Each structure stands twice: as structure tokens, then as C-alpha cells.
Image (tube, rainbow, N blue to C red; front, side, top):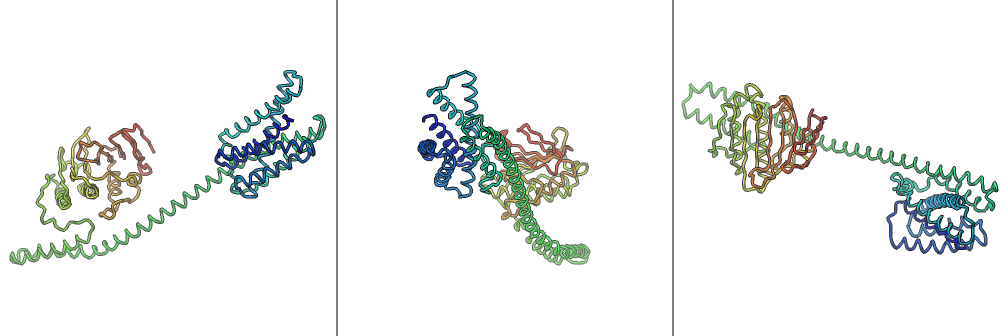
Length: 499
């Protein structure tokens, strides 16, 4: 009695465990205790049926388990039925494997079978079966169960194999003598079905994984398309605004050019008062045009700050303008020259390109400082020669670069300060110019509390064409995109990726 009871208890509790693992249901202590209790009760019932009508044991076990598991786990009807059949089939497979293993062990030891030996053997079979079932779901490939059943619920191949196995189990358990063909033939099909169910399981997991990859890839493509649509729409709006300005400038600039030519041509023919009146009129018209551009300060006539002259007129004019703009925002801008700006513009980079770089980077620094709460509002532009290469550094005390800006550096127009006049096109333009001269671009976050500056941007005319991002605490914060550059260098992280 005890031996039969333990056999059915092992089969039932194993099938309940397999059911939960197949559907990847989280473990619940109360349900585990309920499963143990019901397994004990159902095992006693199976023993009674074993004494009365052995042929009905497995069908009754399937029916009771299906009703119980459907109720306890609240699964769909078709899903619960399919999973119950598969669980009981796998449980019986491991019961047979365990029984054969124990029979071989006891047979090899020439143990004489008695009531106590039979009980010990049945106990060992049950323990070994539980161990096999537990180890089954420790396999990395199978630990997630059968997620494909949840999506479909009634896999025909799995059902067919399970029905075939159940029929073989019924035939073999009612065959009587192990030498009977009613026992041998079903056992052969049990072996084949066991192999088939695990091969089917593996194949379905592979197909499910590939399908998931395909869905993820499709979703990524959809997200990329949506992002591109958003970006295109933003660029369209930006282009429309720029087109209006360009369209207007195409008429205004020639007009102003003609006015200035007439002003100069008539300077010798008119008296000083008329010249002043006409000059003021031209200045007023120019101011009106300038005020239409975002970020232009109107009160530069009150700016009396002078910056160090570089000897290059376009650069001096720009620095004076940016100094006045910074002063209007309560920001102090200084220039330190440790090398010849004239040599730089005559031999390495034209003044027009250098002026664009300085304008964009200083403009970004002004916006960053205006967005910060720092009391030290300062910008320092430094030009020097380091390791025999010209290097220009722009320090500021503003907020650090946003992660989105770092992530898309040079790839697309990106700004987190559109409300402050930022368009995101500045860094893209700077990097495009630097690429023409193989100059390196370095962003350094300064986290030293004793330093009045929070970040530094360095332009190195070293012919390396590198894009560098480094932090003060040796921690790699963001990975810079390398799609458009030959080298990406992460200093202090001791990593170097060559695209």
C-alpha cells in the first residue's frame, strides 16, 4: 500500500510542480502547502482506484488535476488542459526513468525483494523523480518553461505527443508481466515520445525566441521610424523658419549694402550733421534686423568691457560682441593668449571657420550659465600650444552637458535649451568644421568643488580627429557615438574603441 501511495504522490506532486514551472508562475507558499495537501489526498484516492479499477487511474488523475489546477491558478481552459496533459506526461517519464534506475541498482546488488525493500525502492524512486524534475528546470534553456503555450494555449503537436504518451502509460501500467508485448511495445513508444516531447519543447523555444527577436526588431524599426518622423517634422519647422529669414535677408542685405555704398560715396559731398543722421538711420535699421535673430542683446551700446586683442580683426570683433552679450547676462568673459592667433588663422584654420567655432561654443557656454544657479558666472577662452599643437580651451561655470547631447554628439541637432535660444545646430557645425581640419574635440566635466568652472571644451589641432569625453572621477558616464568618426577615445576609463 505504502509503495503504491508513494508512487502516485511523487507523480502528482511532480506534475503540479512542472505545471507551475511550464507556465512560469511565481512560487506561493500557501499554494505549495495546498498542492502538498491535495497530492496526499489524491494519492490516497488513486490507491483506492488502483485496488478497484486500475485502468481508470491515469484518466482520473488527469481529470482531478485539470479541475484542481484550473481552479488554483486561474488559467484559461484550453491552456490549463494542454499544460496538465504535458505536466503529467513529463512526470510519468521521470517516474519511469527513476524506476528503471532503482531497478538497475537493486538488481545489480542482488537485493532480495520484500515488503520493506519495496517500500525503500518506492521511496527512492519518488525522491529521484523529484530530483530529476527539479534539475530539469535548472537547465538554462528550459528554466523559463513553455512561454509559447501562454500565447497559443493549445499547441497541437504537444497535445498529440502527450495523448500518445498517456495511452502508452495506461497500456504499460495495465500490461501485467514486463515480458508481455503489451508492456514492451508501449515502453518503446514511451522512449520515443519522451525524446519527441523534449525535442518539440526545444524547437518551440527556439521558434519563440526567434519570433520574439523579430518582434523586438520590428518594434525598434517602428520606434526609429517614429523618431525619424518627429525629427523630420522638427527639421521642417526649423527649415521653414530659416527659409523665411534667408528669404528676407536676400532682400535686406543687398539693400543695406547699397545704402552703405551710397553713404560712403556721399561722405565727401554732405556735411557732418547729415552724415550722422544717415549713419544713425543705417544703424537703427541694422539693429531692427538683428533684433529679429534669437539671442541677440539689444543694449550693447552700454557695453564698455574690452577683451584682449588677438590681432585678427574678425576674431576681435566676435569676441567683443560675445563679451558684451555675456555682460548683458551678468557673465564675465575673459581671453588668455599664450600663442599667436594670427599664425593660427593664417596657417592652420581660416579666421571665418575659427570665428564660427568660437561663436557657437561661447554661445553654448552663455546658455549653460544662464540655465544654472551658480553665483560664479564666468567664461574663459584660452589659446596655447600643448605638445607642439595649437589648443583652444573654453571653460564655463554652467550646467553640464545633458546625456542626450553627449549621446547624439555631432549626429543630429539636439538641444535641451530651446527656450533659451538653443537650436542644437551649433555643435553639429563645430564638429563638421573640425573634421575638415582633423582637429580633436574634447569635453571634460570638472567635478572639483574648488574649481569655479564646471566643464571645459578643448579644440586640439593635432590631426588625430578624435572625439573625447572624460570625467574628473575616472568614471565613464556616457558612450559617445562613433558612427561618423574614425576614432573614439574615452580617457580615464582606459577604453579605446576604433569604429
